[in-house]
Length: 475
Image 1 (cartoon, rainbow, N blue to C red):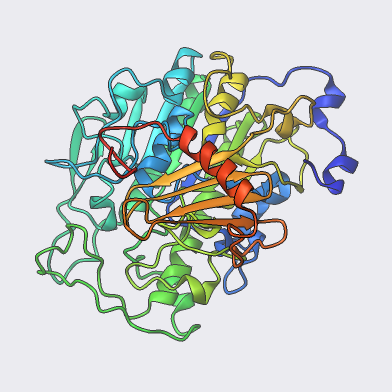
Image 2: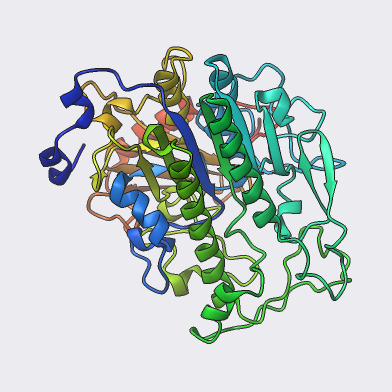
């Protein structure tokens, strides 16, 4: 529900007494950014003023969840409106020659919805849902313009030897696997420039648009150009150098993370660079007269990582929550989320609605007029965003993870059931009350056996077997 500050502010949409116009949509998705990595969510070792400005001008969600705890399935939940027990992609499965297991032919994605409503659709960043020419190719899934990394493994490198523009491979000859690595073309800068071009084109054509900006920052490797940003952070923090891969190593540029002498400084500089990108996107929207009718969303695909020298404990990246990326505890799946839509979302508001990535597709359907918001695992957030009535609530939220023995989680109200080591002999259930124990420190499964059994039954019903991604022992 809305906090007192939001209620006292009133609702712009309610006062107007009319349905909001179909907005443009810009959705910025950070990669492995934790709850506490934004200053508007508590970060104190560096600041994110441009993202903070979105929160000041919009609504900050305090109980919003990613699709799951790793990249590809989290994105699958997002683009199809399904939770991780129903979505087609349930793990980070690599495929040859490049890329990940593809979205199936016939999948209904939010890109198809936007296109059917007359929107231009653009994706700039990391895809990870199927290689060029497969059923998961961005163009096959309703994307008009794609530029960036098709493969999330390649996206471990910020100076890759190539990117993709639709079906065309874009070679980057100045990015080489030798001692010159790090002095060529920084891929996030190239991707950002293409996103700005997309906004310019949309403004010139006067066509509504959906821009998805799934940046790779701040996923490892921890590397940023040697410019004023990095220089400004070097020496500010104590450092523990990361002894990672180096040019010439067999798996350098093939998934391994580069060595980094100043990982703390590099991480802070990377998030700062992302914040600058956000500021430039907002500035371009304003310059082109698009800002007032654009819904801007900022979120992260999962919790903070610990690879490549990253140190989420130093930065308190998971805030008050237990766990990291790959955990189904709150720190792995609860993500910092902001919605900003001038004139429709009351500024400076905070909301504790319990939502997730699969709510975005029905929300977009209602806003764009592309179809009914019914029939998916998500619910439309339009009433919450605009201060209207009739917001549907979730009975529960469900999450699953394929690796590390298999993990599941289900949240219903304040109760959270965690199923660990599903495929192992030491499988166990853990029960938490998040209202009383937000850090998930006191397992109550033995104290409340009936509630544990009831939530386990819900968990079993939420999981639909998928032969491509078995998580339950015996599937």
